[in-house]
Length: 168
Image 1 (cartoon, rainbow, N blue to C red):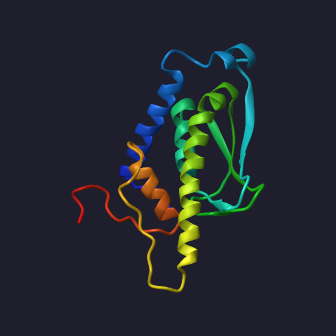
Image 2: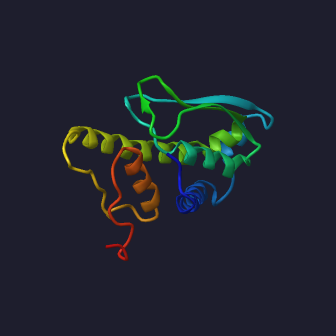
């Protein structure tokens, strides 16, 4: 499953807000003080628990925003909707170390949040398997995250109910 153009646009706004919270008053002083400017790193995001991946493309968008599209190299990744086992790599990249550290918190927060929603949704979908019941979401989403949270519900096998007050 991939993000729609509208979801990508909303993701970019969310990413920029998240990065602004960390960088509004200047760059990462800890990384500047401790990491050589030319350092490069290979990093892997590894599942701690079983679940459903959601937000891998969003994570890559965070890296694009911090490092530019040429500033990192994807070595391995899973697709959104992949069933995960503990120890499984979701994403492995090679990039500028300072940039990775700058992107880390925004990237992890979004990836973990969306994967959590997809995982919980998948559990409910599995619980009603074999019935005519569909697991639907609501508009009770966090401000600014509706498009991404509803995307994660779909990744987990759920159905979007209403996107806004205009829907019936």
